[in-house]
Length: 167
Image (cartoon, rainbow, N blue to C red):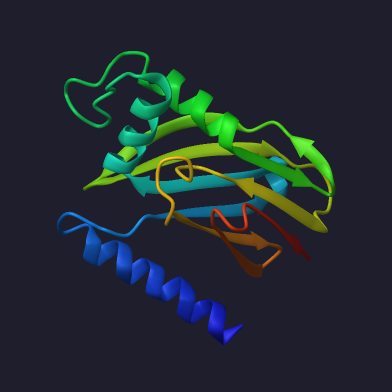
């Protein structure tokens, strides 16, 4: 437990330090939290804007200018499509639809918000996350999950693109 906290803290510090200039590490941080009253799991994705733009350009051959005054009107559609192609979540072994809510920019970080329908008790979460792995071989996607005050984490990479947490 203490080890996971230290890893999470290091990721936050790393993201803070790398937000000051160009980065050479490829990290995404994904937070998932069950909100039983609303019958959803909230999902927040944080990735570097330039990495996301590189991946979207490579995939769709469009420069979207995310978070810029020149941002294309259909940028959100490309984000939704790319995310849907690269992230899957199963709750209690059932594949769930992920609904895009919106995005915002924090310095050079793109923050995207999603919800996942979640009725009842969640005993198991399975996550496939290949976001940015097609563009950056060293990409690491950290998934932090909070279910009923229980916190657990996964690290997904090109070598391990899926993971399961049981609560």
